[in-house]
Amino acid sequence: ETIARMAGTTEDVAYHDCHVGGQRFLLRAPWLLITLCAGLVSASVMAYFQKISPALLAMVIFFIPLVNGLSGNVGVQCSTILVR
Image: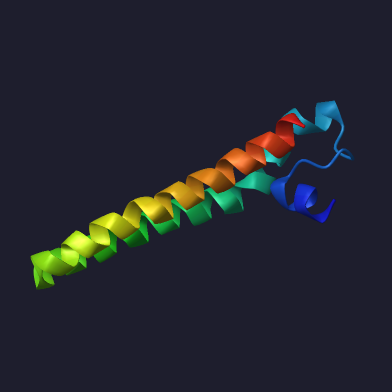
C-alpha cells in the first residue's frame, strides 16, 4: 500500500476526485520531475565530457541510455500499478 500511495494509485481516491484539480497528476508529478531532471543532468554530463575528452564522451554515451532506461522502467511500473 505504501508503494501504491507513492505512485498516486491508492483506492481511497474516489472516481470524481480524480478529475478535480488534477489530484492524481499532482501525486505523480514528483516522479515525472525526477525523470526530467535526470535527463537534463545526463545531457549536461555529456556536454561537459564533450569539451574535455572525446574518449571519455564515448564511455558516457554508453552510460546515459542506462539511466534513461531505468527512469523509463520506473514509469512503466507506475503505469502497471495504475492499471492493476
